[in-house]
Image (cartoon, rainbow, N blue to C red; front, side, top):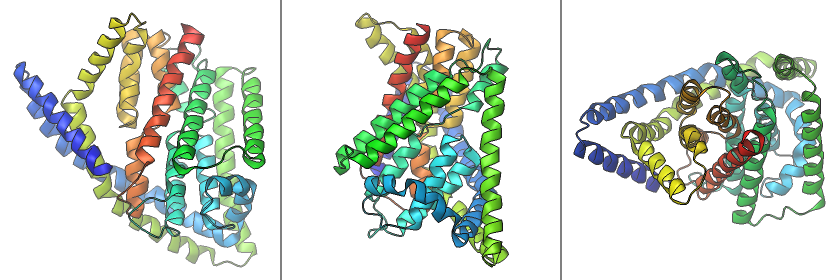
Length: 408
């Protein structure tokens, strides 16, 4: 799948460059060459930037596992994960690391989510009989990451505040609805591919509790001001993070674990994984950079606009589509598109709000796939990309629909 996707990206970029040259836009050649070398530099910067934080969390996770804290946390969600990942044996450490990663994603702790996700993928890889082919559990885990619900997307609120939004957090509920739709569709698509039965008492019970908790949180946050929501989210996330770190170390000390030695051993693994990521990141970033610099995404956007106009549809959402089209490929690129849309149309315009909702409701599927699979050397992702992109499309469509319902 990745081989075919890579060739498609290069083919689309070459075709787009040819069209641009036929129109006399010779600058596309220098743009493409610049993007090639920029992607190489970016791959190294991202990987090297992960060394510190990845070593930190791999070290802490090793201490937490030796202390038994990770196993205690996993106990809460293991019944659910065992039914979604039936090939993972009961009590396996993967349940703990998966739970920790998903918790970090829900709380919006980006600096912790990626290292914890890499640890979870490593644990799942230990059960993989064919080390170059993704297992069902790894695919489900990746899709949950590309579509995971972030309860309070504080960064999006901050960008809206910087652009002068009247109420920066007024898109909280639309984002939550859109990202929930993305996650549900992602899980359903994976279940269809893997023939998982979702309609049993355990899964339905967890779903009822989770959805009930989200509803209660939405009701409570609706009574707070935008600044109070941001303060609560930041305090809650940081508080839980510190609680986990101190519990790892202190409980390990009580149980007479050699905390320093275990931390160093785990940190060394994190360092090795960060360096291994460079080739996989470079391959994906190179293809994406060429796709952007060649103008292929712009041609796709113009094609969508022409089709919508032809069928007589409302075209206001087209102005926010650059963010939606960029999000599966590049988080920084999508952020730049969102800010450009806010500045051009207004932060509280329909397009400005929709761009922010899309930014907060989907993830960078190609980046996540390259990083997580690259970390464990998986070359054949099977149906992971299809499921991840399906969840992205569902999230984008839900964002558009919700935006029309709230602001249309």
